[in-house]
Length: 221
Image 1: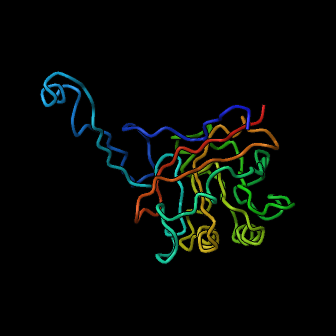
Image 2: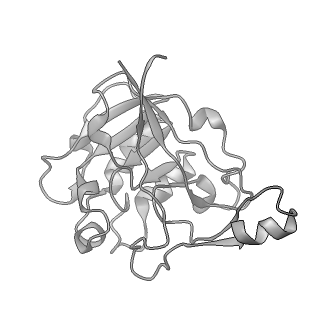
Image 3: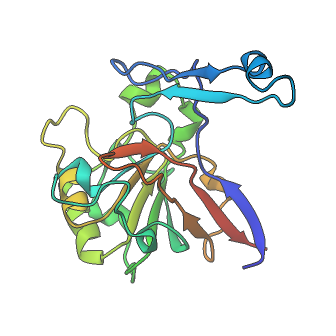
């Protein structure tokens, strides 16, 4: 399609303020530019990066393996569930309270679509409010999305579940239904009401339940 690309991902770096209890990423060099000069007799210069990261930082995707060891991980998720998905954008910036119930999600045919929830919470990224005041979906809302047969759920806030509820019913319902979840999206205000398409491919790491991704959208001209 013709149009423009909108980057929907938060940047990951060593100074990133992460959720309390999760260490920030460590981005170092296994081989520096300076060290490479000697190794390659001064004929070329290169850098081999080394990254240590807890998976749930930045903009990341939860695979069904996150909830059930018998379900697909990042290496085995079908790309058809992750790329070139029609976006159904739901604007929730005027919501009341933190809980997002079924009525707030609207209706219509969402089969095979990426349902993307815009709350505006990304404006508070790396602040205390982002960790403690963000919205979440109710269990009934999750049941509605499973019945709607969406391909993927994307949100611009911390967690689709209420972090005070150890049951995590939304993750459980969606992931067991094979619906990946992308959290911490940003720049959703640049999407068009209709016609945008989501691309959220994973790095094919076997055994990875969650991992950062470079999500982006193709937006029609």
